[in-house]
Image (tube, rainbow, N blue to C red; front, side):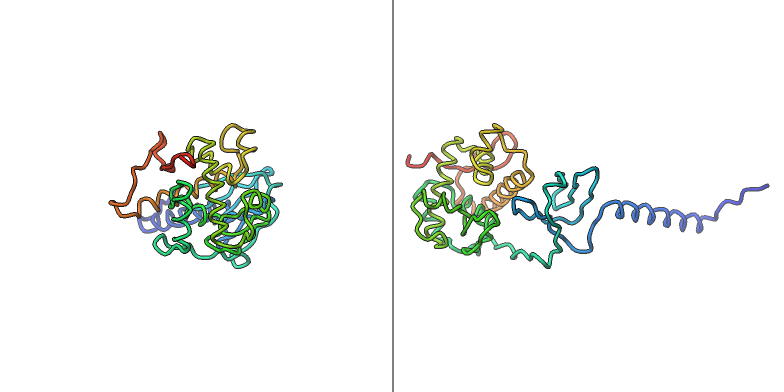
Length: 248
């Protein structure tokens, strides 16, 4: 019995079919929706994902920049993008409330680009924003924090930015200008940072720290060279806030 080998043309067709089948299997193994979706966490945070997979009680999420994993019990809903449409990012040069940001930056000796980066991550520059945890306004202040800082109208952009920058300055001073710990405390609270002695192992907080630091670095890079202060580069190469303790 002779084995009939495929012709070169047939062999190419077979290889193409095998390649297509392999790609189809790989795509099918990841529940990637036709459109992006939002993973809604118990904390109220929404994570923008392009695919997800549930295995052994854990979600593996595919998102811009890589993957993340979390316990299934931390996920309360999966929403299609049209249910929760995020506003388009604000261009660096067109960021509103610039005068208020620069005034607060000067008053509390905090980099204006860092303040703008936090506002972008917290509220996308919506002064009426309210989170599921009841954080409010541009810098997403909790009512008790706002009251402690003397805020009368938490939705007033001037008051919100002033108090949020004041709080940010206090955190920078406390953590000796360690930007990662400062941002982690701003997101998850100082008690959580104290509990773990580092950025808490929460997906929401870790993504938040990464998002703000990335936006901050981009804003610094977009500044005209003549106006850029000397940036401090830690060992991991990321930009940190170039500030002094408040009041110095």
